[in-house]
Amino acid sequence: MSPFDLAVSAEMTFTELAFVERVQRISEAGFAVEIWSWQDKDLDALVATGARFSSMTGYLHGDLFDEAGSAELVRTAQLCLAPAAKLGVPRLNFHTGELVDGQAARPQYRTTGAMWLTAQRALEKIAQLGEDAGVVFCLENLNTIVDHPGVPMARAKDTLALVESVSHPNLKMMLDLYHAQIGEGNLIELVRRCGDNIGEIQVADVPGRCEPGTGEINYPAIARVLAEQGYTGTIGLEGWASGDSDTALDAFRKAFTL
Image (tube, rainbow, N blue to C red; front, side):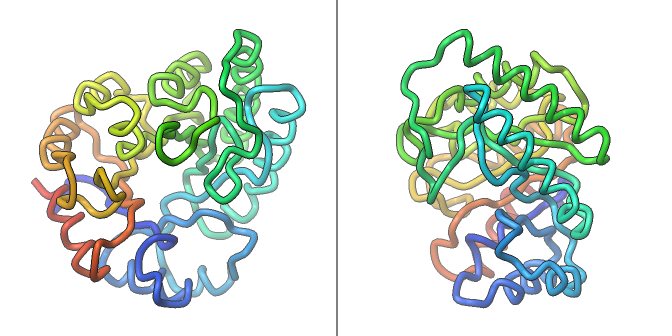
């Protein structure tokens, strides 16, 4: 058995099926389920599946780099709390910059000190929302080379610095190792550096963003380091199946079984 709580994104696997059927298949295979947006989902149908949900997107609009954007992010994060409670989702995921169809809604290619301070103030409010609702908000690192150009303060070293600056138990990192490999590499040292700031880990291989074993990342080695550090939290497959989804899920489980 894996020493970790394994989850799978229903947005990226079993894509030939209706969404509720995807959730059922993932749950029947013994995994928790990750979703992205909630407002386009039938929440009652998702609850009826009996699936356990690991995380979902925790904002609708907004970003962290100016006052108007950060106010909107905090406002719409609050709107996500009731749906999260309905689904029993413990972690709400968000980004430093809003994404629209995967692209930066307001691209920014220069980061200023004022942007960092604005982000920190907004994150303090987000952490308090999490504390009041009994959930953890997770700030996800992104790569700006391939998938998300124009998102400032998005690399793992930046998201870690922001989370550490707030130092609140209801604000953690969504450490995405696919993004980190593209943007920074040195993943084992990154995992060690992030330590207790990790709220959840997302994985996919590079290149291709498919299941472990299809690219260059040595996920079994990373699994061993995580176990040595005492990490027993959630690791989510947020990647496409290179072929059959059941086979991809098996490869994912094998990579994180010690």
